[in-house]
Image (cartoon, rainbow, N blue to C red):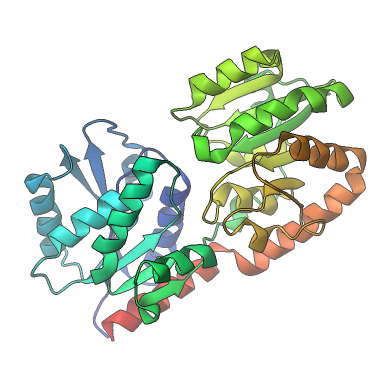
Length: 372
């Protein structure tokens, strides 16, 4: 078979879940002998370059496409030029914007097209984009869903069953499997050694459900006065969440850590990881917490129940339920041995089912399939 050269295309607002999936896949693809180029939009409203910088640091060829609006002819031409230069034989796009521009750039090109649907954010405007996206991607050669629910939505939207593949996200276990020292992270965040740390990692956006975690803080602290709550990540809801913490009188108990590059160390300091999401695909933060052997509480949305088996590898709760969050956290803190047993089983489940090696193997098979 001829050489496989991939162009990954993404509109990025930071090193978030989809971006880290892309980098893991790119690493394994390169190890397998594929040529990999990473294309990132430089958006006029949010020109985040973190992914491009990280990809360059890893030695990947990176193309940055300045994009000034919903239809930028120059951006389309730059993508077409990139396709010709390598030359690329598979374009792999990763979200609404990149899907739209991929379709435009591929016109008249003998290049295969793969789309990954990582899960959609909530809101009326984004629902419209999601419906529009389903029309755009119908011409893709293969569409990858990271969860069964996403695959089912694709089928309902009219995508042919035979073009859909289910490939779960995967993580590099080596970075999380060993619980190393968290002293440096604790010190940088001003967290005392004796504090109980309850934390979460993810973009501060409405669908991540942080507001419901904040509503549970007072109840948990009444039982565990040394508890502190660590929110790692940033986003458009940060000011709203800080206001909620202030109004509920728990602002001094909540640490807004912003974006961090030391997530493995952050995870290793946690006594409980909480994922209070309202809407998800297959969240990398959850896989990473389980890989780090952290007792976990998560809402039963998206593909989360595939990862967290209730009372076996963690505790599942309904979304938008602060009382359930408080009850589950208290249950883990009151029986630490049971919490550690669930964490060990969670680690084993992620190791066996959600490694980056397994994910990449499935994608590589898919690439070869569409080129054969």
